[in-house]
Length: 266
Length: 265
Image (cartoon, rainbow over all chains, first blue to last red; front, side):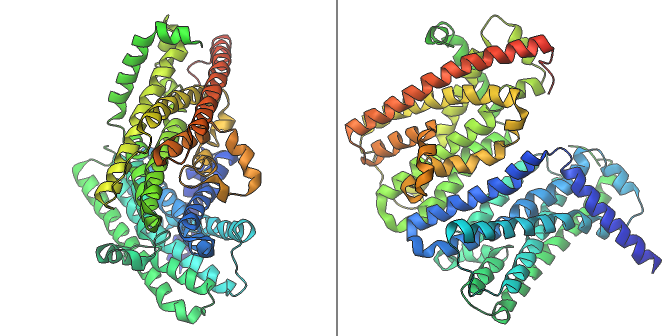
């Protein structure tokens, strides 16, 4: 019991401190620009591009896709920097020197980003309703909240994997930017999955966001939560697999870095 | 800064531009901003506008190139003074007899020139992956529009860079300026789609007039009179930018020297 309490405390302290550390250099303006204005402007850009291409009647397709895609800002950039930042800040050696449970440390890095990412998606949906006329009158709002949460968790799973890779990658932001923009194509946020070639659909199906976006569109279209449940399970499963893969690499890199003495070598 | 300074120091400008390009060729952030991001946007745009024919494809090619130009101007040219500060060369640059704004002009020239690569790559994506046969409808006018766009973007960059140095509060919003300008300048779709109240804001953005000139001449959608008007607006904004930049650079250097904060954030 005592061990559980200690691990919970470690989880919470790790989560909150990593988040504070991540944003210690941010002024409110920088936060607003990076986490609110940029994602929302990006959503407007793709929604207008989509409606220019296919007509105003398809606006909801692009609003839902791009609103959910916003979670990748926290999921990819936030989580990666929370883990990779340990190396940049020179604290990786101390972290690996502690006897603390590695899984608790690792998952703690994603926790606050999940809340932050989900909040970003909620803001995007609100703007979608107010400014772009998204109709949520037939939507199970509780179900939509669940989709947002699951999709955010799943995207943070990929972020955990990217974070582990950032421990051995020099140009982290290049890789992050690349993955973030590839998600714009492969997640189906802007291009319907049935218009993709089969090889692209195969990739889409193993990426986070894809199933969550489909589920979101179905739910807003009036489907019940039970009918989109299989999609949500898939989304969650994909996120867990990425997260576990990330954890595996995290532990592997720790062993290798200690063995070779390359803990903070760039 | 006036045109006589540019003529007098043209050699310096070219050397600075060459050095900047050499340095940035190995910078992952620059490579992504200038090449990969516009290509991904071009891919998405071409895919989404697939049913709209070659004219729309040309619109996307030019528009995605403009996104690369703007992102490069915002993030790379915008930090062209700050980066000298970060690597400790700002004091030396300010101390040399060559006017500091000439150096920044050369850096901006490099950024804009390398960003034009994104337009060429967008063209290749349209031709090779989507099978379009794209032709610039008014090649001569398009060429002039490209040259004026280069000059206009460099001048705009000369305003942004000192503002970002003198006002960290404004620079804090840097990430938030990228996509709004894509939208308001009509890079990838006409601004007629946007709410009417945004139109005056678009008119105040120099990239909007560059986009109008490039789109109009590449698709043949603009008459000669319209194109001349767009060029006139680019020139007017460039002159305003140069005047404002001149004032800003004087204030920046005076303030940095009098406060002894040249190398400090």
